Amino acid sequence: MKHRILVALGLAFPLEAVNFFLLMPPLDVGYPPGTSWWIRLIGLQWVLFHWVGLRTIDLLQGTRFAILTVPILFIGGYLELALLLILLFSVRPLIRGLRGKPLLTEQ
Image 1 (tube, rainbow, N blue to C red):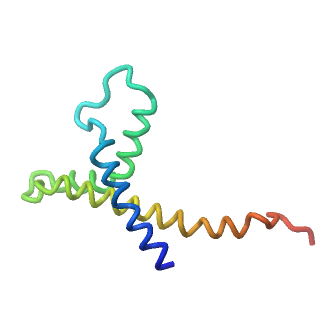
Image 2 (cartoon, rainbow, N blue to C red; image 1 turned 180 degrees about the vertical axis):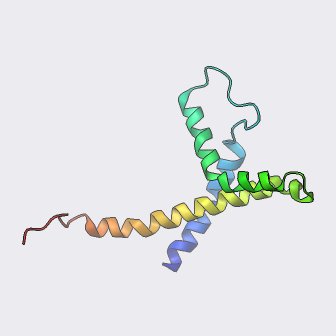
Image 3 (spheres, helix red, strand yellow; image 1 turned 120 degrees about the vertical axis):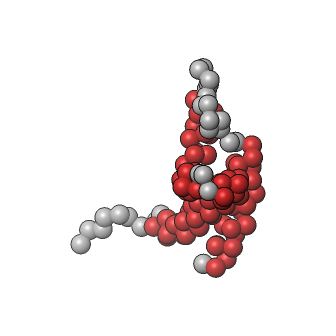
C-alpha cells in the first residue's frame, strides 16, 4: 500500500503541472461562442480538480493571503489528483481479483 501511495504522489506532480499550466480555462470571461465540446470538457475537469483551491481563494479574497492564489490552486489540484490516483491504484487489485468470480453464485 505504501508503494502505491508513493507512486501516486510521484505521478500526480507532473500530471498536475501539465494540467495546471497548459489546460487552465479562462475563468474570468468564459469560453467564446463556438468553442468545441472537448475544450469545454477539459475546462470542466480543470475546475473539478481545482475546486478546493477555488473555494479557498474565494474565502481569502480581501485578505493579505490573496497573493497565494497560484500556489493554493496548484496544491489543491495536486492533492485532489493524488487522492484520485491513490483511489484508482487501490481499487484496481480489487477489480482484478473479482474478474474471474461470478457476481451471483448458486447455493
